Length: 544
Image (cartoon, rainbow, N blue to C red; front, side, top):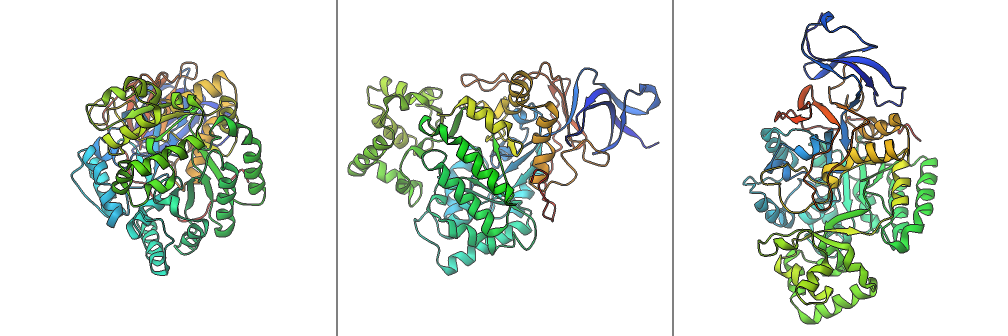
């Protein structure tokens, strides 16, 4: 009999396939699941180095975070403790138009402040160089990356508000084509951020149609769409048009209806998506289980303020005439005074302003005896625009509806952090510490939005298939042993907006590539993660 490294007995196996759960045992040999047995088997029958009694617990494939931003934090601290404690074994990175590569020209220069913040000394330009650096860091979890459209555009055009000419378009296509050969799984856009905000639909269609994403029959297009509020419908229509004109599967990042005045649009959004799916357009999405979002504070500004990059933006914020126009445009868009009570500063760079982390703009304005707009501008200037913020503008009922959709997966929309060290800083969104336990515990168990087997499918095999992972996402013989063992009665998120750096409860074991990264609820320090590359074939969506 083949030697067994780990034998897991007596658990309720939910294999990720939508099949009925069953009691059984799993054997791990090396990095793979060597065999599965239904019902209980005696410990002494098998020669296993390690025996785990999973009685009363669920055995599931490892959870896949479909929306991560860990490109730089994993280089700074590869332990990724906040992710593995949630049961996350694989991250999909390179989202919202920002990826680790390519980095040339202004794109390379623009990332310098991020790298210095995390004390990263190495520099790179392409995915091959980055993947080698990350591999040498030995990350705890598996890493797959998309290519950021923002990287490509900034590498070729910079942060100018202009259409690419034919030569620039050719260079962008070449960069995207090169990233696919190096292992990228698709193209992502961030259409509210510079420089993606300056692109039009035809640029994105042209880029996808002429960069081998079709001919190679691999890849996906994911998007932080152009609007999640006032122009939400038009933004979803744009995404669908891109899918229709390119034939590439499309994916909506952190789908939401942002702003009370837009909550009613959920019916139209779902109708648009499902009509597109019925017309054979492959469209999926992801969402975190919270009603507050988190991004850069300067997204409050009109898009013209970003043109030319951070230095030019900062110049505008110091020009009183321009600031007067900026303020009026913000007031016109957000006239309600309570708007500022729903924006919380999550991170700043300077020590003198650390007290602001976890405080609302209203609170900061009152403390400084300023009106909120003046406090906003002053803070952005002092911090040279590098301010993170949390925005509370969503609806709980809409959240539950989105989470319930069979084609919507779960993503943290967060970077990998740890409970000590260089990433233990700021007051980040709790989604980076509790998204998966909250989805399974609060929404599946407590609110019964779906059966557990459906929930497991949404966070394991569905994302594996959607993003082209090979032999992952299922409890299946011969598949990689990415496995989570949790107590369904006790799984619970503990992270809060006030205290985000808290581990969840109820997750007892996490195995990545057959190695225990969480054992009896404790972090082991083992870092067995790998750089993953997509399957070179187009997979059909089971739900079409």
